[in-house]
Amino acid sequence: MASAATEVDVIIVGAGFSGMYMLHRLRGLGMSARVLEAGKTVGGTWYWNRYPGARVDIQSLEYSFSFSPELEQEWQWSERYAPQAELLRYAEHVADRFDLRSDMQFETRVTAAHWDDADQRWRVTTDTGTAFRARFCIMATGCLSVPTNVDFAGIGDYQGKIYRTSQWPHEGVDFTGQHVGIIGTGSSAIQSIPIIAEQAATLTVFQRTPNYSMPAHNGPIPEDAVAAWRANREAFRAQSRGTPGGFWNEASERLALETPPEERVAEYERRWQVGGFRILSAFADVPVDNAANATVAEFVAGKIREIVKDPAVADLLTPKDHPFGTKRPCVDTGYYATYNRSHVRLVDLRATPIETFTAAGIRTSGEDFAFDAVVLATGFDAMTGALDRIDIRGKGGVAMKDRWAHGPRTYLGLMVAGFPNLFTITGPGSPSVLTNMMSSIEQHVDWISDCLAHIASHQQASIEASAEAEAAWVDHVNEVAAMTLLPQANSWYMGANVPGKPRQFLPYAGGLDVYREHCAGIAARGYEGFELRSAAG
Ligand code: FAD
Ligand code: NAP
Image (tube, rainbow, N blue to C red; front, side, top):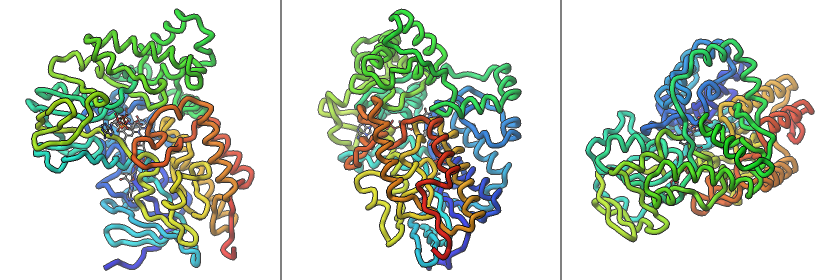
């Protein structure tokens, strides 16, 4: 039987980094809050994605909270790109250090959130039967927290083991001596393939679309770099905040098409040697001009040809259907070189598609494969997936899913017209997944906190995005995306990886620096585009 609803000021859904920091800030405002989380502990992404090789693709010194200087001084990252276990330890440490768990409820999935216009409260229900009434509801449900529903024919008949990268067994998996297949060549696959190949007797990679990947050149962070960071952390953080990506990436104003070819290649080479995303910002015209973009695409293709000994395999691994950077590029350790190992094989699903799973393994149009285990690295219903799975109803009982039937509509990625007092952290229409997510999360949480403080100090009862401001923002998000090459790819940024999902560029491509200023200006002008109402209406 459902229990009586518990009353709190704010319900936060999700205990990843977004939910954790949001709770911390609400405590500072003296508001009561409860975090509801489906998983068993904090960490979100880093709780669920435990596949071999899982680690950040933004350097850890920047992919970490900046809100507490003390936290920063006491935490030491072991590597430039921290692995999942360390990120989860970090999340646990933050939860303990700020005593967050006492207001968190784990193994609790939020199933519905309904706005009650009469008493101006959200009614939030869960799969455990616990229910809540809250003035505010904050969705910290994650951009990449719901795996796609891949529905391969015959998958139920397969007798071997199936593992999803995003729901990896906590005890780990030992592939030693096994014949393993993996479907997908996105970031999750590209990180795990070299490590699975170390263990498995054979590894067969089923690739539908090749991705661009850059070497991480991972390793311990040099001591002098840590010392410099500690001594100047505020300056480093300020520098990151002033960038479009929320991390310092040596952005250049130079144009690839106006740079002599040898100089251009030398610049790409220098940045390739630094590793990670550094090559992305080598020239300002690469994200917006196909001819400029082709210069870096050709450079990376050359790298693939250099590393992969079999020219046919190298060719298959070279992306041809999308400009560089229009799908999230991957950052790897030894990915391309793994294909030089005799027990690793690449299968081109464009030439020979998967027809069905069989009892023994996978049948493509060309061949039958037998596997002890198959790994699904098939991605996420990004940005809208977690919100779509909650029955969210705003004013007049209107379902968010229906409002978004033709694609998500938000104001700033923060609020939705008709859904008062409901915030989305890194929601669709915000820079989010195009950035260092830690920077975007902090910016959103800080903005929401300031907004709630404003509402309290002005004795307002509710805030809601106006339909006009929302429509203008949606247009702006689309216009900015159209100025770039980003919409040219069939990417999850476009919703293209989920059958039936409306095609719309989901994040805001204008840059976190520009967006941050925009959000600050809106707040400074009395929350322009938002309707604030007192209890009397
Ligand atoms: P999440 O960490 O996704 O947390 C959301 C939480 O909400 C989850 O724990 C989920 O269980 C919970 N939840 C969702 N729906 C419900 C519900 N209905 N009821 C209860 N609980 C619910 N970003 C970067 O910037 N750099 C990286 O290197 C990077 N690497 C990544 C690697 C992987 C494998 C993945 C999947 C993503 C990566 N990201 C990266 C993006 C990453 O998701 C963010 O960096 C960040 O961790 C998001 O934090 P979050 O709290 O917003 O969301
Ligand atoms: P992804 O990038 O969406 O990759 C999914 C892969 O599965 C793609 O290669 C896709 O092919 C393939 N696929 C999906 N459905 C398929 C099907 N039915 N048949 C055959 N192949 C299929 O997902 P992801 O690798 O999990 O990464 C998602 C995002 O999470 C990343 O872009 C990144 O933002 C984040 N992430 C970051 C890191 C990191 O380095 N820190 C690691 C993992 C994830 P198509 O391309 O043809 O659709």
